[in-house]
Image (cartoon, rainbow, N blue to C red; front, side):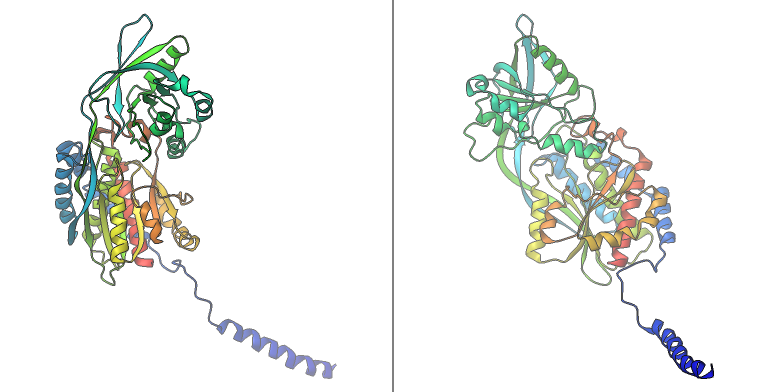
Length: 468
């Protein structure tokens, strides 16, 4: 028995001593922020914005004081001067304008009338699509032909389509809960292309507005023509109510349209992106905040994208108010001509590439000033995982959705430069009721929702700055 014990004891002791030494090995370094606790900082940011935030007042100045700010107009020029002033007030130390070539497109006078065989001409509310060709200010009169989808269009002969005005009554899919998804699915349809319709021999195109509303407000959209188009046909949009009534008429009888548009393009001019930043205390790597400064020519552009503009300004103001020393440069870019061509976003991406500036993160906001729900993360999986670790900090503020993976706004060209992108996700159930219409006005914005969006954005920028 003693012999067995003597043999086992050294083995036991050696095993015991070995097990004691094992934990002394250095653990592998992990990319994590779990050792920090930022709940207090998140609350300070929230308290500051919800009690002292100026975003709502700034939005009123932009929408009511300046109003429509379409590219290549005096309204946009006034908006750039306003933006420079507000960036300075918010605490930006470096402020400059970046030149961007934009198209000059003038809507002019426009009207649409319809009539049945034995009826009188009836006026229909409408909007020309951005960059659409006009009718030279003359009446374009033709029979209306209803087409429901591309397969139906493909079955029609040139003789059936020739000299007709094609009407597309294609509503957004109300069954899709995410209204951004339903909008994009419909907007990408080839049936909404003037080039596709024109190549079939049609004279014009009428489209049901891309809206979740059931009213009669028309919502604008930009039209694209292919370089090889021999004829660029005019394109217009009408409200949901008129679209449904027109389809009912067409199922019973012939309906004529009389379209008159003086819309015309007049070359290009110079507009500006407006840029302001707080330099980094540690390095010059850039964390970017982006929103579009322009709006449609008929619209205040409150949700699209006045709210995004003032939220970006609010982030800078809050960092300064709380005396937060940012490690990296925090830069705001307010983009020119997002609505009518996107030259502002392409111009900024080209600038970053030429300068070889290091951008470590870009956050866009262009879905309205509604309650924040999360951030869509368009970046490498390992970067997404780092942000996932911060979820618990955001949850008390109603921000929980980090699962989406798109960033489709003005920051999107930066993806080609391998810059991690994010987009503020908000509750968009009402956004497309007002989007690109005369209804997108200051009174549709709720102050508290607007400020909560700025809270979430500031918290995210703070976390990126301290941990990336």
